[in-house]
Image (cartoon, rainbow, N blue to C red; front, top):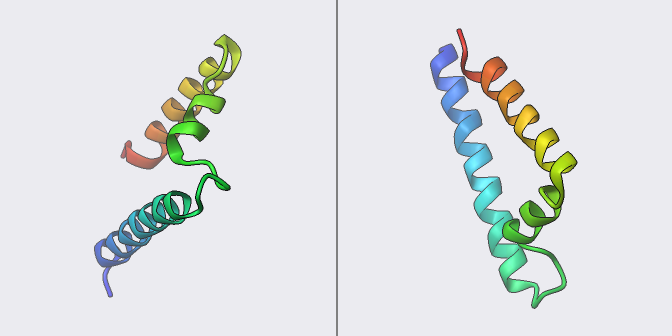
Length: 66
């Protein structure tokens, strides 16, 4: 398996986990929050919003810059 194949496997696994999380939250009858609720809580207020933007910038720099 090449490095490219390994990276693709990891991205597919992440995508499947995201979809599975959305399905489980949707079928839980409101017991588990969905991704929209989690995003709203994570960005509630200027400090949290700034931390999220800085974290997103850091992730983009380290994951996609070569």
